Image 1 (cartoon, helix red, strand yellow):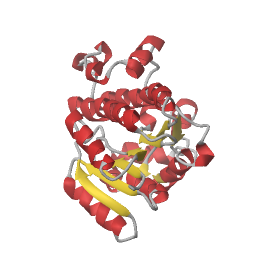
Image 2 (cartoon, one colour):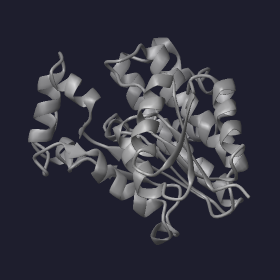
Image 3 (cartoon, helix red, strand yellow):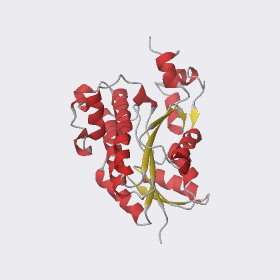
Image 4 (cartoon, helix red, strand yellow):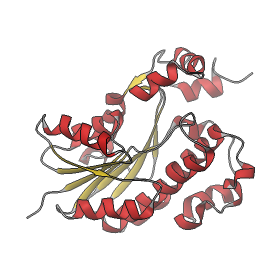
Length: 276
């Protein structure tokens, strides 16, 4: 008899913090575009008593996503999804951001929703950026929520000529993530399962440290200095929210997004971070 299986996409600090909260006694399959990243976190967690299998998984490639899911199913029924995979505005091109963060997430949520165990849960890591951009129309939001994944990148609002820069692409991707979670929550609910998203602010990770020391460093430092919390967050603080959402204590929560940004978005609209 197989174990309950956790599919974990994106072998970074946030995903690992979540996996450590919920992974005891379960088989964890961690997928990352760079196999060495998956192998590294698997080694750390296996040495701490977890049962983790590393695999190569490219979130921009549907065939790779399906292979990732099938690998998980070899060990038992998939009961949980942690999607912490993605690229940032300074890491990738407009095309790559949309293909990975927007399209890939839509595919992953849809395909896992088809096989998720009754009583299963999932969380996808979005971003505060999705809350900062100008509001879209109701019809545009519905298109982001409901368009079949293979048709998403053909939408007019996502065509390259309508995307200003990589930050705009990232914001659109994260807005789409939030809307897809709402849409998929209805489908997951038909299987007795739940799905939510978390939108972190500035979280200290190796990637964030690179950003702090890069060309956008002053922007990020100003953001966390002027948010109500007055500091960046930690991966464990995001994992605290995920643990609630994925436990029985969160059993009445599905189809929603949780800002975990130290109040940076509040400050952006109504405080010192408000654009002049």
